[in-house]
Amino acid sequence: EISTRDWSSDVCSSDLASDLEHAEVFSWGRALRHHPRFQPAGTNVNFIAVQDDHRLLIRTYERGVEDETLACGTGSIASALVAASRSLAASPVEVVTRSGEVLTIYFQQNDGDKKGQFSEVYLEGDAKVVYEGELWDETLTR
Image (tube, rainbow, N blue to C red):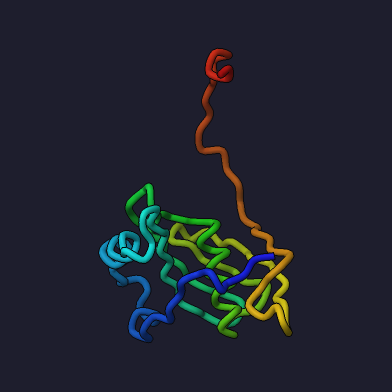
C-alpha cells in the first residue's frame, strides 16, 4: 500500500496550472529541492497541470540531476496519486511528460479508514535501451 499522508503537496496557482509551459521549473524546483523541510536528502519537485480526470501534464526538477528532466516515473506516479487523493484524477491516469512521452498510471484508491491510501499501483510506458556497458569480473567481487 502507498499512502499520500507522508507526501508534501500543494495545489499550485491557477496561473501556473494554465501555463505550465512557461513555469520557472529550474528556479522554483531548485529552491524547493533545497528547502530545509526536505534536508538533508532533498526532494524531487513535480509541477502538474490537470487536463481532465484521466490526464495530467508534468514537469519535473530532479535531485541528483539538479535540473529539469524529460520524464520521471516515480514523479509521475506520485503526481497521479496526489491528484487522485484531491479528487482531481481517477485511474487510469495518462501523464504527459516533458519529452512528450505518455506514462499511464493504474491504481486502486482505498476508501473508508484507508482513505488517501492506494494499492495495485502500476506504471506503464515505453522502455528503451539508451546505454549498454560491460563490467569486468573483478568489478563484481567484493
